[in-house]
Amino acid sequence: MSSIMTDLDLSLAQFSLFGSLSTFGGMIGAIFSAKAASAFGNKMTLWLADIFCITGWFAIALAKNIIWLDLGRFFVGIGIGLISYVVPVYVAEITPKHVRGAFTFSNQLLQNCGVAIAYYFGNFLSWRSLAFIGIIPCGIQVIGLFFIPESPRWLAKKGRDKEVEDALQKLRGKRYDIVLETREIKISVEVSKQNSNMGIRSLFRKRYAHQLTIGIGLMLLQQLCGTAGIGSYGSTLFKLGGFPARIGMTVLSLIVVPKSFMGLILVDRWGRRPLLMTSAFGLCLSCILLAVAFGVKDVPDIEKISPIFTFIGILSFTMMFAVGMGALPWIIMSEIFPMDIKVLAGSLVTIANWFTGWIANYCFNFMLVWSPTGTFILSGIICGVAIVFTWCLVPETRGLTLEEIQLSFAN
Image (cartoon, rainbow, N blue to C red; front, side, top):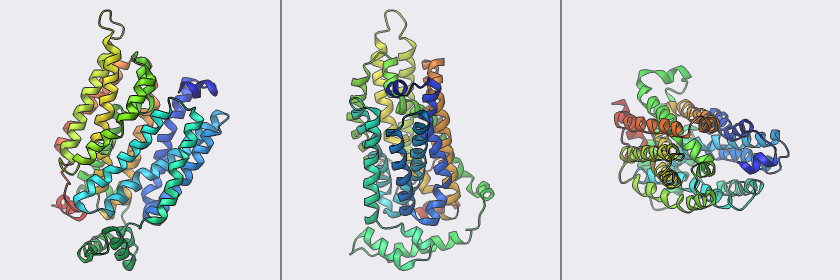
C-alpha cells in the first residue's frame, strides 16, 4: 500500500478505489460466469479467465499512472470473478460424494498457497515484482486445462452422451463401473431440461426460497465479517496496533497453508454446519480481541497489550476464516442449487458476494479512520449473526449426492 501510494503519488481515496477494483471486477465477471460456463463449458471459461488475469497483471506491473493500475486491477478482478464460480461448481460436479467436500475445500487450500507466497515475498519484493509473479499460476493453469476432462454433467446437458461416459471413466478410473452414476446424471439433466426456459423471476418462487436465502446469506456474511480488511490490509493493521508488520506478515505466510489443511480434513468428518458455526464463533472472538487491542492502545498502563492482542487477533482470524467461512459458502453454493436454476442462481449468489466485497473493501480504510475499535465490533456482531443463520437455515449436505440434496429440499 505505502509503496504504490509513494511511487504513483496516490491519495488514500485513490488507493482505496484501486484496492476495491478487484472485487468490482469480480462482480462483473460473476455476472457472466454461470452463463459462460453453461454455454462454453468450464474449461473454456477458465481459459477466458486466465486471459483477463494475465492481461491485468501485466498492466499493473508496467503501470506508469493510476489509469493503467486501476485497469489492470479491474481485469484481474474479472478473471477472478469467472474463476470463483466455475472452480467450486466444476469440482463439485466431478468428484464422488464421499470426498466432494474435501476436494472442493482444496480450492481454498491452494488459494492460501498463493496468499502465503504474496505475504512472504511481499516483505522483500517490490509491488511490480509481485504483479509479475501473479502471471505464473495463470500460465500453469492455461497448460493444465489441456489435461483435464470437461464436467460430465455439462456434457450430458449438451447431449454428448459418449463424452459423458469417457469423462466419468477418466475421472473414476478404468476399472470403475460408471453405469449407475451415468444414469443418475442423465436423469437429473433430463429433469432440469423440463424447466430450462426459466427467467430471473422464476428464482423467486417459493420452492427455491430456502436455497436462495442460504446462498446469498452466506456470501453476504462471508464478505462482511471483516475478511476484506484483514485480507487486504493486514500489514496496515499490524502497524496500527504497534506490532512489527514484517514479522507479522512473515508469520502469516508460514501458517496460512497449514491451517487450511484443518478445514480440508474436517469438512467431510464434522460436516458443513458444525465447521461453519465453529469458524464463525472463532471469527467473532478474533474480532472482539482486535476491538480491545485498538481500544486500549492509547490507555496508560495497559497499552502494552495492544501489539500482542493485535497479533493474536489477526492470526486467529486468518486461521478461523480458512477453516470454514472462507471456503464453505462456495462449497454449499455449488451443492444446493438444482441444474435448472444453477446458472441463474449461481450468477446471482456470486454477484452478491463480489458486490458486497467491493463495498466492504472500498469502505474499510475510511472505517479505520472513523474507529478501528468500532469497525471490529461491527464485524464481531456480523460473525455472531453468521452462527445463528447457520444454525437456523443451513442444512447438512455431507455424504449426499447432488441429486439427493435436491430431493431433500424438494421434500
